[in-house]
Length: 176
Length: 164
Image (cartoon, rainbow over all chains, first blue to last red; front, side, top):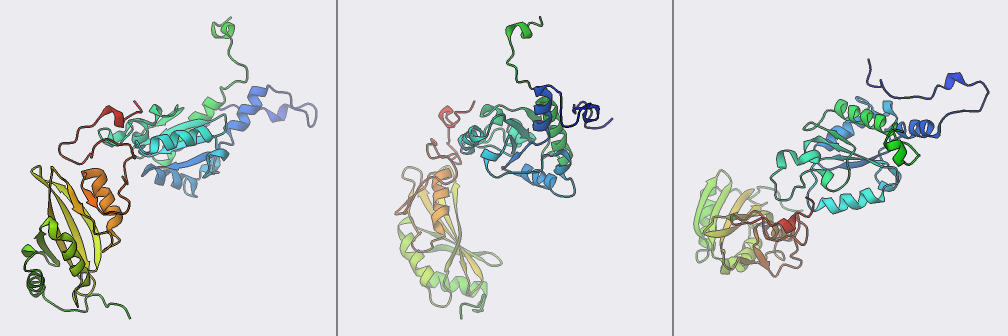
């Protein structure tokens, strides 16, 4: 039993003709997307220290194919909100989220980004980044260890692999 | 070249006496309260000329401003200036009483440029207006914030929290 259980990979060994891949568009795109996630360096507080240490050799986020932290939203598809979001930061965060390329995901890292955490009653604290942008994965902890961040990223990979190009129809939604 | 830190050797009592004599008309309650800190009170109207003279004092000049604190005592506010003297390697705390009704003090930005952001912070969080400040905007909270949150009588309004 490993952390990667449940992730789907195209079966490359089953090709019958060289240079031809027969697969579904969903599978191959989701596979590519879920293994080249570009996170946006959005460190706001002490969670950022854990996020950065995830990037270096000891914890090595590169093992999961998402080590390229970018400092600009235009090159990113994952925003890791690591830290306390305050009222002054919230509109900036929203604008940066809107500048990211689709498809895009958000991870709320730590107690502060999830709910305000220990600063819940603070006059300047937004009680959860999900009040500003939609969140895909919440990671509890104060701050979460890098291993917890990795588990959150793997949960996100599983979520990405369930995406589909086909818009859901009423028939599909009712199960017919 | 430059000042050697602590080159002027004076005991704290000597220094306090000297400061008290120099500003006999202005500083009150001059006392030594820490191994290296003199504490004194000061009238609001005297602040600027005392600050200028402290900054330019011969030999024992308090030529550096470490920070400005603001305190809410419910009956009144206080603006506290933490000064440092390189020559004597000592600190001086100036307590200036500010009435709640008209919470305003004259700026010391032009005397110690370090006061700039500290005065903005005290204005932002405590609502003490520093008159003559070149750019008295909020520094930590967003520009359209209503109220000064570290005041004891602060009431938080829903307008300050659009993300609910």
